[in-house]
Image (cartoon, rainbow, N blue to C red; front, side, top):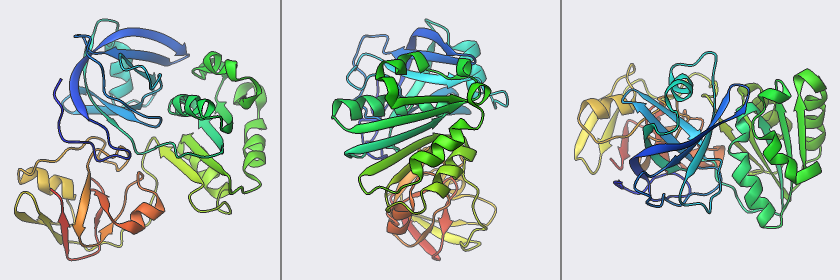
Length: 330
């Protein structure tokens, strides 16, 4: 197991890249499989915290991110839940078709852009497979003695993963399916978010429609109350960035011009600068790097508004520059 430089994610871990074995595969719901990964040598896997994800490198050009949803104290194995997307671009189809017990897959991580911040109270909101990062968050909140509730919505109850696992928490988990409950999920969502609270953090993961509804409902909440994780990039306004600009790669000693039709990532990769990337949509955080000088035009769906305003890091697969020269730690 080789360990490259420390991950730039929040919080930082010892990030590794290794071939792991599928030790166990289970069906968690209609269209959802749960994969348990171990090091075939029996070595411990790196520490991780709620909200972390790993990359499954299925082929050199097929890399997907999945939230870790097991026990953070269990160093022997990592667990992910994967929904078979009917519009799959290859990732979920590969997991469902190829990753049977005994198979191996290249894995990179962990990385965390959705960390659980300490709080006296949490409102967790999940849509469909977005429940996966909530499982270790709930366990951590419960162990810390925090008050919490999960509102979990899905298409049908049989398609909602980990419902049986969540039953042990009793009434703190509210499960609503469109098939059985109709509009009850929207009503419940409006109810739990109706009154802003300075003592509550809201964590939400799911499809874009749910995230947008939650963001709209939380506009009156105190700054920093809402934490979201997206499956796909959020729609943005037209870029305010310069059409072309220079990027100085400080560690590599190169200054490169980024034209309008290429990303910072593409230009750096073509010039031989050592960069990591995966989603190319500004969602996964793999390409994050530090800004040394200059103003980034942050086009990603990873950093929150405060982090974008702080201008300390940038996702080079989608973001650009507001200054003619951008100096990066590359």
